[in-house]
Image (cartoon, rainbow, N blue to C red; front, top):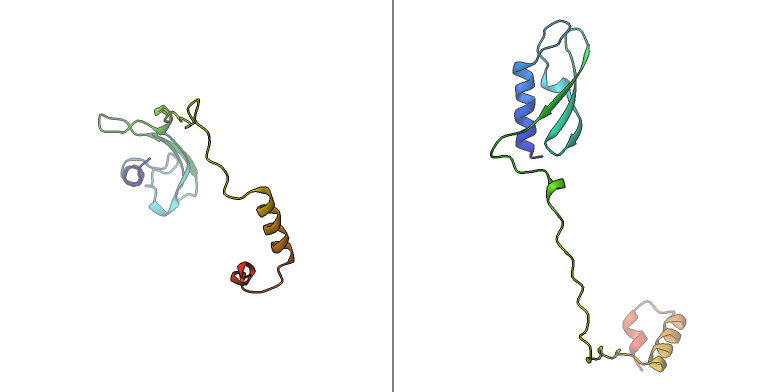
Length: 119
């Protein structure tokens, strides 16, 4: 849900919804977001006058509202595989070179890795 929608809902709560117990308006500082799911938001508000807590549920709807993300299907993932008859590229190191590199790395005691490759 967009932040501007949340701000508009909170403004409406402040002006249009009042404490059911003492009829005082809710202050912005006492309105908490409890959860958001799609275009539905749940708030908890505490009355500044009598400290009564209220649960407020709101939902955004209308022609300009973007559908929630749950209705958008994820893109199909296609894996690229070699075509039949084409070989995969060869590895850059053969087994002997890899074994030598492993040995050099295990014996390395220096502080500069560039010295490892000097012969």
